[in-house]
Length: 234
Image (cartoon, rainbow, N blue to C red):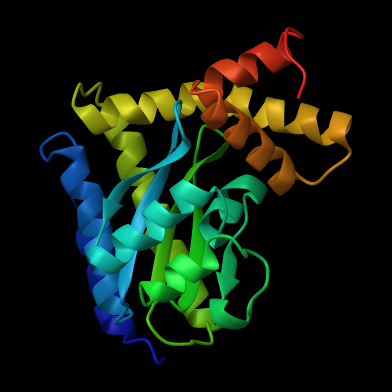
């Protein structure tokens, strides 16, 4: 898709000038999601954030398609957006119907009309705290300009979240953002520990941690801290 650079620059400039101290943080995140959906004429978009209970939780979605993209990956613990968070890199799929990397979540995404997906890590405090995710309802070759532009929206989102956090806000999303910063490190370290002890890759280690916590109806963060303290082995 050919990007309208003037429209892109105008949208990014408008988002840059939003003031987190004056606007509810959840509305700011929703503005970014809405803007990226419109610029690229996407079927949906959303944001996942680190969560103590489920490892990652949806905090914003553009519409039903965006909500499905987030909810399905939360449920199954896999997908391009989950992988983007774990490896701290942009992850894309031009057509998940022919992409065998996420076999459990793919049928649900396809049933909901999701075909192409791009996940971009959102970073604060030196590492990822979540992802900005976009989806289309037909196969799509993600161009370099599209990847760069979605990355710019991710950077705007990072800035808005950081300013909102520094503003010492007490709204729900600001508190969840602080939780994300607090919980990210032990979860990352526990994944690293499991990679070493299980001799596996980060995605498998993350899923093992998440699934064990879910099966035992425990918080992922609590299980991670027990593993690091040597009180629990998986």
